[in-house]
Image (tube, rainbow, N blue to C red; front, side, top):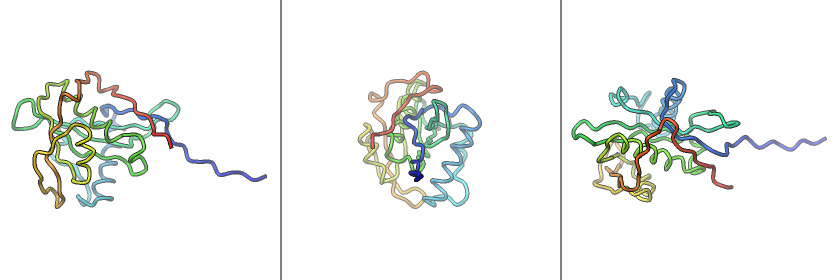
Length: 181
């Protein structure tokens, strides 16, 4: 009897929401370390900073049998320190095997901006790595200026809030589906 190899499990959908449990927050931190420290080598051992003390982490969860299985994407949002109504997004990361498969980056951005919008955001900004600018432009963001951060080219970008209706229940978030192969 010859057994054919079994293809690896691939989730059919993902939930993108606020990271509300301790395991989700820990997994978001681990994914950020993987992407920003191990892969991109922007930081040496850890990418955590003072913003993490008041930021809201958002996670993209893969599912197994309808239940959350693993964090495969993350971003954080926080109030700006200079202007009332100003919010920022930062540390957008998607696990390597899931990049480009389910619009996870776009979903994370959607939940980030729409949930801040529901909390009184009047201006949403992010420093975006140069290679990710086309994605943000496609999602109704405008580049305000080019800047260098952590030795890399970035753009200071602003979201068009009209494209992001307020999301009043980000603890449940939204569901995105895997692209057909």
